[in-house]
Image 1 (cartoon, rainbow, N blue to C red):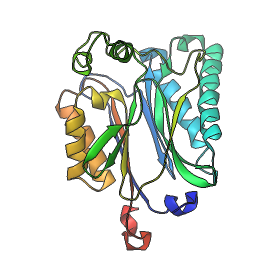
Image 2: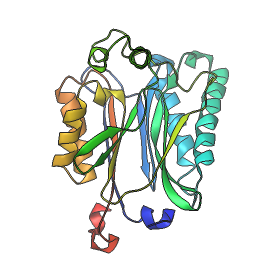
Image 3: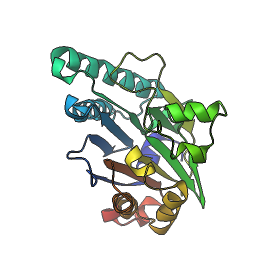
Image 4: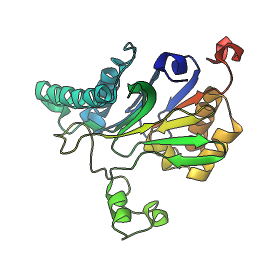
Length: 258
């Protein structure tokens, strides 16, 4: 497997979102089309966080019909989404203060072969499951992550730190840094999870791994991850996208599961 089209035909994708038990509306937005898989967590409440996340997702949707996008295309769309959010605020001053995280993965062509481009701005996350090992691909842009990096607190302390929900980068403000992007070679049998922090604030990484292991079908896994997060408290909107790269020939996968 080396081309984007070959790998795209072997993907199975599931997604789910829920408002949760506390919020009165859902400011998350997600995209799971083709090989463009994105989660955006809007911020700003009635300052229209859902508008910001929607703009981010619709801008990333423009990559769906490109046969072989590049890493630069992915970065460019993130930067374009930020400009569109800023333009919306200029046109609608009542939206001032809105913003969004954005994270996800896009199948791209780099150096004549297919790669996953994992992109992130904010504290939504992408995880990768290979065999029994779950690893976090992205790095949070948050105050607690900076404290962890500085050795001030441990990851366990970060989970209950009062500043754990404060992000240091988001779309909706002039970006001082380009979006983080990682290139990951596709591996047959792997699965990726993209999610808003409504999932990771309720479930531990070990719980995420157990649910993904117990539900090989991406749609069933997405549904169960959201259900478990809501059952655990549901204090925020919860959105997930799960993608699996089959290690069997695509012709052996039932059409209803593609």
